[in-house]
Length: 130
Image (tube, rainbow, N blue to C red; front, side):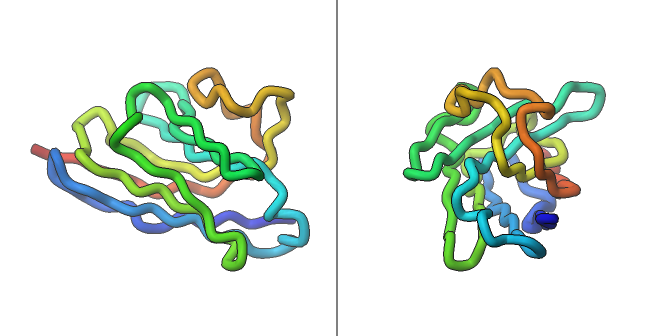
């Protein structure tokens, strides 16, 4: 059992930055081989994919965050990060890290759904105010 724990959420002003972290613990023996991703969910909306990082560090982003968000990982620390810059009001929501992609094509983060990943954290809240 892998446990994913997000941190780094909080409040930021429009145009500001936040850095989210996700640390894996528990049965992490194969965690470094997993495709990992960040999702977010705003109130009343479905969870949506934000960014994905492959085993070869291939990156893909949702169109709404391209050029503003950066996903990265530190395999030695079992850590996943999401650097968010130029924040907008529509970036607010609960951000979740996910691991172990279950679909054949794990690159198109914009089409991914909650059922496409096996392991999930509990989320961290991001609030953006003007």
